Amino acid sequence: MPFEVDLSVKVAGVSMKNPLVLSEGPLTANARLIKRAAEHPIGAITTKSIQQQNSRSENPYMIAAGRGLINADWTATDLDGWLPELDQIDIPMPLFTNIGTNKCPPKKAAEFAAVLQEHGASFVTFSDYEPENLVDAIRFARKQVKVPLMVKLPPFVKNIGDLCKRLEDAGVDMIAAMDAVGPAMDIDVKTRRPILGCDGSFGYLSSAPIFPLTLAYIAEIAQNVSVPILGVGGVTCAEDVIKLIMVGATCVGMVGTPILKGLSIFDKVEADLKKWMVDNQVRSLDEIRGCAKEYMHHVAPQTLRAQVDADACLGCGMCVTSCYAGAITQNSDKKAVVNYDYCTGCGVCQTVCRARAICVSKDMAKSEGK
Image (cartoon, rainbow, N blue to C red; front, top):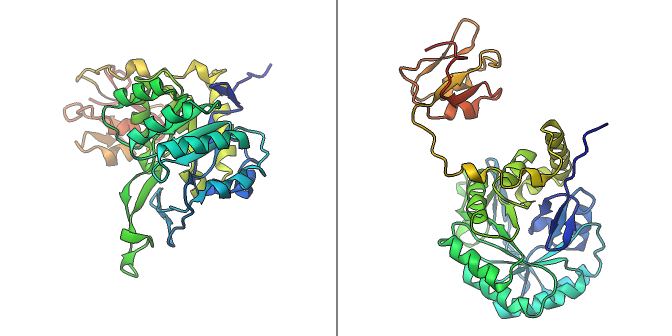
């Protein structure tokens, strides 16, 4: 009998077939784009930010930068423009509607939320770089909105525990984090000019480069809230999804990676999630959710050193290249060998090893050298 896995999650009474959320952005700017996205295995889809006034971005406004994306897309549609779009949407997954409270005061945003729930919104979410606006928006909206409410926190909020408590007291149903990091920019060395066309030539960085920041942020938030968490920012693969769930996320959002790699990335991530669960005998994501939290404040002893599993070593030499202490060499079979007079146990080698043949450990019995 095949090992059956269940990717489904349920948040504030809203059921999703998997934890993957297409977050707000250019891919969800209207009904046509949302319906196109709905052809893929996505747990929920979030509209692009709804604001008080229409606006347009100066071209170009999105550029690839290394493995990341710099985004200066301030294009927005107002509520009157969104309502006929929403009324055209009939998709098989929950629709999250996003309101940008940075361009829509909290009281007005709450009024928008009350209207959006009548036009198909399964969730209403508020996003802002000013956390106080988010607290006020939830407090005002909770009095008149029946569907669940979410906020998307900006990066690097101080006193995150206090903010999360106030959001929960105001009635928030889920907390998302984090938004893109910036400002960021790039220069075309051929033309000798900034690439982005906006005033100042600055945008905000997302996709792969910010994932470690997101992971730490979600881990911190998870220690301070009782409501579900949506982890978003830098997610590129199923392993990223698993890591976020292990530190406490309920759902995981993507937007930069689908822009750079296409919406089919959701097909791949869902398939890879299922494979990982089968390979690791995990039937439900509940089995691993938050499992890493108990180890986050564990301090490892300073006596750990690199250990090489010679049978697993591929002889690629990446550990040799990355060892700043010059403690790793290769023997005649190209297997990694550690000199423990030089090894400091820094940990870089185990993270660059594709075969996972090196780990930082007390036990050095499997190592080929001393």
